[in-house]
Image (cartoon, rainbow over all chains, first blue to last red; front, top):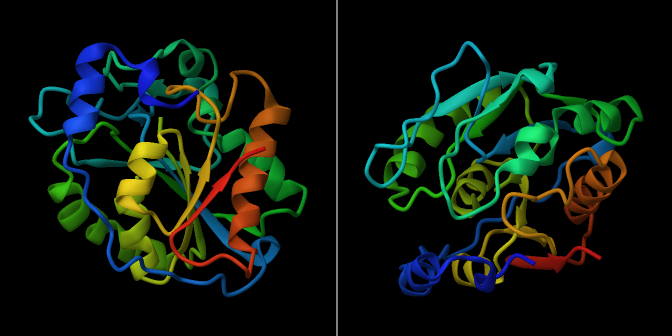
Length: 160
Length: 78
């Protein structure tokens, strides 16, 4: 179960004391058309990279705020998980990256007509970013115009 | 991820975010969240289990099409 009890003590203490940023007001973009007619982008925070990309830098204080674009038709078996947190078990993702970067599942759902289309690029970021300011105020605003240009309608976000 | 979802939502992209930790979800308040009953590292349930992975994704996508939801919408995966 995804609750505090699964974490080692140091993380339980950290997470209890962490000053979470409260979203207020909560923005709301209603779906403009059915999912079966919408274009979807996947955003994963499992620190996934392709074999040609630089791994995320786990030495950056507060968390690596950079982003990787990953083709939506990527061979999932070639993806590399570079998340280095010892707060969770990495075995499952390394066996099957679809567990946190489900590009194959999305292809299947698109082929079945459940999703209208997949954006040509999905996005990969690093999770466990304790200082999210640079990610939210710098990285994401840089990538959003690309998604608008790509005519993305919906985003599926998967943490790890 | 919830903060990223809010940024996208502000710019007109409808989002749904999977969530593993209720404490964080309730404090941060993403626009649409599907709480999944899995441990960290296993957001779609299990490796090499396409059926379960598709079921979680489909449940998340269904939140986007539920007109009864209001922000912040936090729904359990069952």
